[in-house]
Amino acid sequence: MNRARYVPFERNRYFYGKLLTVRDFMSEQTYNSDKHRLSNRLLFGSGVVSGLQVVAVDDKSISMETGVALDKLGREIVVASPVTIKLSNVDGFTNNDYAKNVYLCIAYDEKGKEPVHTVAGGVGSSEEVSEHNRILESYRIFITEQAPKPQQFEYDYLIEDTWSWYDDGQVRIYQQLPRYVEYGQSFELKLIIEKTLQTSPISFQYELELEHADIVDGLIDGKVVFSEPTEANSTRYEKIITLRAHQADGDEKSKHIQLTSVSGSSKLVIGERLLYDLSLPKQSVQISKESVADRILHAYYARPLDQAMEAPSDPCIYIAQINLLQMGASYVIDKVIQQPFHDYVVNPTLLYKMLLSSNLSTPEHSGQTELDEPISTDDHVIPFPTIEEEFARLIPPQIEELEEQQVITGVVEISIEPEKKLKWYHRKQRRFISDEIEHGFDVHLPVLLTLALSDEDGQSNIPVPEMWKRSDTIVVGDKDVFKGSEYELDFPKVSLAHIQYPSKGSFRIGVKVHEKTERLRLRVRWWAVKALEEEAVGLAAEAIEQSHNRAATSKA
Image (cartoon, one colour):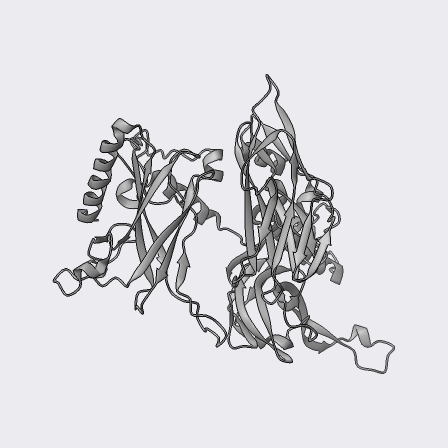
């Protein structure tokens, strides 16, 4: 299929007495393959469909599992058997500097198969001529040290605007803004810093300048400031700045937030290197009364065919990021990160069932609040999610609303399993952090959080046999109080803490494990209490106590 321009399809027309040549048979194959790849490209996109997990076998070798992917030309990449290979034997791997991050890519490839003698090719020649009888649709894997430009990611340009501050192969700094927001809506500026593990500590700052929006949270002394923690052991960091779009002026339909930095205010420090006056970002966000989902869909369907079919010269798929460490004159594999750019193809059936589950699940099964209106099944009609719901809804967190929104509670499960195959130079992992959790109250509202260890049943959508179910226990305080008694608990000794983000209405839970345990996960129940008037404090305390009692005695 021609990438540069769209070529109308044409197919063979057969009739009695037609002389079939190589051109006719090739046209037959091309017609079918091009139409199939066009459907793949426009209906499904590109990325990993299934499998293709990459793991480190030892310090210098990797293994790739079987799987299927679609490239940006709609071609299927099929890996039928696992591949184990030494990293230095992969195409593109260089042996000059080992302290770096490299990316494992997979691309579609074709190979000739079954060479056979051809009579036509040997006419007038004394040498025997052969041609391949088959074409094997295969793949090739290779290493690249350059991460893809943010603009290359499938459909990201419709959703967000990305600006690259700095990229030298060892350090990569860029920031992201949404393409569209609604009037008065809060949104995030994400400053993303990626580096190799052995790169010196990084600090970066600049003074933000913008129009038609206000800064809500995230600045230090009026500047965007990032400083890498001294004992950090990460290769990726995010700095979040919360902004809010201005309200509409009269009947104004849309306008643009212009974002840049004050000239000369940017300063990047990498170890002892100091870089001033980086190129000024020029980004914009469109403010509109129309919903963000509708704006994205409009931009998607307004694309001309040439833009929809656009693909890079080498339409490969990045399936893993491999972090390397310099060890003397050689290297070791420190970590393998699966799908660093989340390049997946989502099965439409799965997506529909996720949306359906999100729309129809009830508190008894998933912890969701009840629907505002009961669903009538008299005519066997299931209400389909709106466009906004399709974009905004994921499987919601487990939240139970109590006492007319005075208290909200939920359960989060945190993995406390250390990373596998720890190297001798690693520290043993004892601290574990949850994903960001929304407490459900209004943004900026003062909220009090309480945490407790939990072994409650009925918190999962997945049915389990009775013998696997836990004991419906919540532990508040020091569990050692019950040590030696008939009520002694099998929880490990841990410390719990949380970090709140008031401007985002969310928080994270941290767990520090103080002793060895066979458990791989801990459940933590949280309670969020909103700010109340003085006369309502007693009611809030009563609500928390009732919530504790219900959660401790409830059964699935």
